[in-house]
Length: 154
Image (cartoon, rainbow, N blue to C red; front, side, top):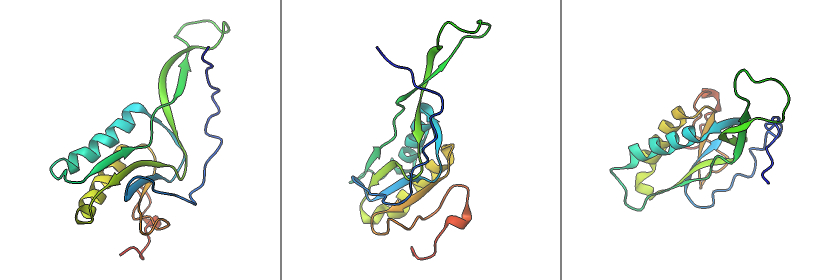
């Protein structure tokens, strides 16, 4: 039988140390912890695809986030008690330091791929940073905070 999860699910905030790119050369990493719905994850993937659709040579997009946590709710005007409510949706628990999207791109397409990830940042409900394989500890830009930009990536 399926066990419904408890509601206190964002207690663990994660760490931004030791970020490892497994599949790609560019990635979008969470800077804060928040819940993301499956529609928000898909909107980010579609945003990346819109920018990169014309230049598909040697390009791959890997989505590491998937909605795996059930959210429950009781119907309106129902009395208290009688157990937990039915499952109404699924969410992904995005924790700080986890990779959402990875891009495997040739070196000639880096600028276009960074532009695609910046566009995907605007579709997500949390702050993110763009990292690449050569300098993993150096984020390029966040969606909300301009003080997170470092100058040694150029």
